[in-house]
Length: 72
Image 1 (cartoon, rainbow, N blue to C red):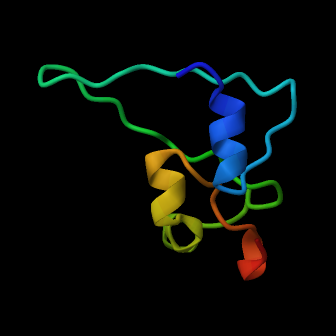
Image 2: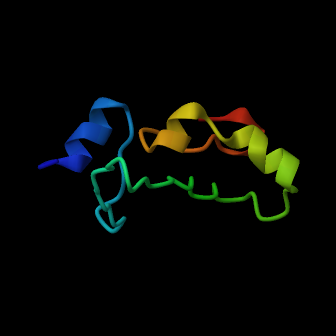
């Protein structure tokens, strides 16, 4: 992928220039897991509350986890 930031922007995700992006291709022998970044202000949430913030898009790397309180 030549322009990962541009692709993410097409999905509505804009990351700061300081955020590092890594792109790898999966193969039949190798798969990668995307772990969503913890939203700011969620340090006191338990596992169940954090799980409620995770979206399909955040798990496949084309979106961010919801902010606490359901804001996006």
